[in-house]
Length: 119
Image 1: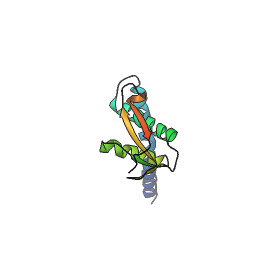
Image 2 (image 1 turned 180 degrees about the horizontal axis):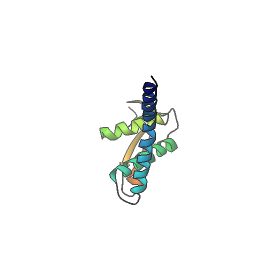
Image 3 (image 1 turned 180 degrees about the vertical axis):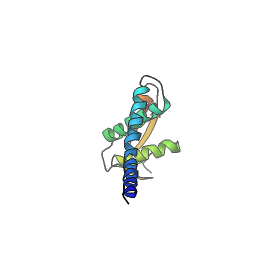
Image 4 (image 1 turned 90 degrees about the vertical axis):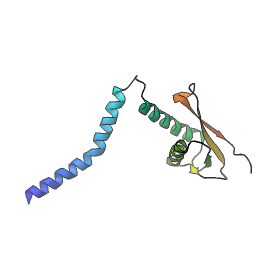
C-alpha cells in the first residue's frame, strides 16, 4: 500500500513539474540564443510587441475588425486582442487594426489602427 501511495505521489510531483521544466528550458534557450538571429525568437518578440501595441493603441472593450489578409496573422492578432480585452468583430467595428511588415519598424512589424470605411 505504501508503495502505491509513493508511486502516486511521485507521478503527481512529476506532472506538477512539467510547466516549470518547460519555462526553464525556454528561458535557457532565450539566453543561449541572445544575439543570434532566430526565427522563433523573432516571432516571440513580434508577438509581444504586437500585444503591447494593441494595449497601448486600442482601449479595452473597443470593437475592432482585424483587417489582415494572411489568415495565420489574423488569428494571432485576434487572439492577442482578445487577451487584452479588445472585442474582435467581423464587421461594424469602431476601429480597424492591421499589421504592416517593415524592416525599419520595431521588430519588423508595425500595428496600424484606423477608422473603418463607412458602409
